[in-house]
Amino acid sequence: MKNYPTYRMFGEHTILLDWPSSNELDVHKEVLRFARFISETFGDEIIETVPTYQSLAVYLKPEINTRLFMDTLLGRKISVSEIASEMPQLVTIPVCYEPDYGIDILEVAAAKQRAVSEVIKLHTDPIYKVFFLGFLPGFPYLDGLNSKLSTPRRNSPRPQVEKGSVGIGGSQTGIYTIDSPGGWNIIGRTPLNFFDSTQLPPTQVNAGDYIKFQAITPTEYDLICVEVDAGTFEWRKEAYHD
Image 1 (tube, one colour):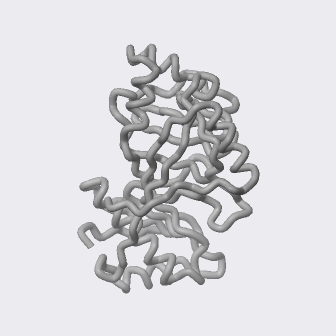
Image 2: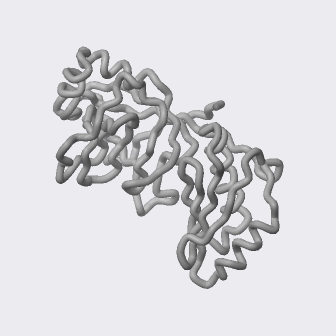
Image 3: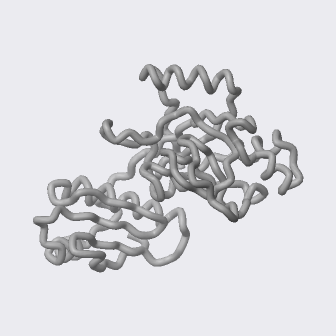
């Protein structure tokens, strides 16, 4: 392992692993591989692992001795060679950018002195990496937003942002997975459901995956809504070589 993590207690039943700062993408890949190794090796002892940019929280079952578990991990001296790499997936997300759906897109376009069509192109051109899920259940924090679209969060957060809203907050873009208060600038909305607590797994997108936004019309949005409600919509996913 290029950058071996440090370990520390993070609550009564949680361990936090921290990686030293270096190349962000390389470190994140190691965090994800480490998370998978722990989940596969110690699945009976943990509740879940939660990766971020350069750290990993391991939540243990209440009956597991946290200190002993941490000592076990340290004793393993886990190396990358033990952890098989996993092919990430590229997920295409349909988004309607019309002002009725992207309620801040006209404001963002005016602030950037660009046509709305340019804003849409700048947002749909990149392939975004999902660094981690957080803030809301299944909310993907994405890396790859064109710096020309970087926009500060709104001064006054809205009391409710509709599920599926696609927003820009500073240098990041993300998707509101449930109805929630929020201060990001909403430039579009997807008809897809990103989180369903009744399903296993409950999320369609995971840390380490990639996302590509695809602009759709209001009519296409409505048609996809019908498929989503009927349970017949097929997510567009493909293997992606990063």
